[in-house]
Image 1 (cartoon, rainbow, N blue to C red):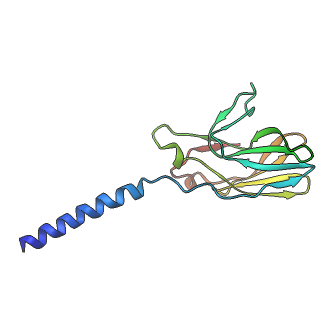
Image 2: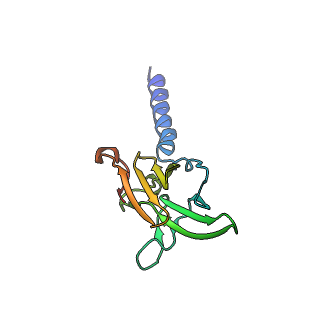
Image 3: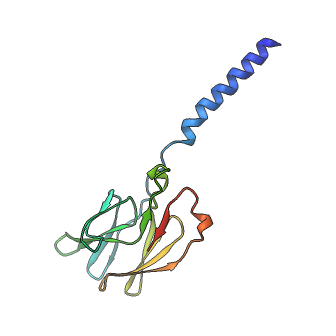
Length: 150
């Protein structure tokens, strides 16, 4: 009987040890979102860790997700980057579990509609560079993530 208890105890410990790394593992790669073409521009998602020229002083924002690259179709030249939304990272959580990736883009009239994996939706006017949030997500849906600002 003691042998069975020891084997059960070892099995339980082994199961816990094996499951912990899986629970703490990194997130999956960002979704594959194809580029969108509109107004002579190709808009693609940048998954780089920074978005250039997104702040008023033209400096870069350090975050994964929420950044678009705007390319001129005629000369294949990168024109600029646009930060669609900001992620407020909480210091007590790993940053990769707080990253919020763009999940889809579509053209609706003269605006680009961007959706992220939380279900938030933004409209981007490429001419005026204005961005408006058109779909909000309730705070209770933001578990393990930072607060997202438009």
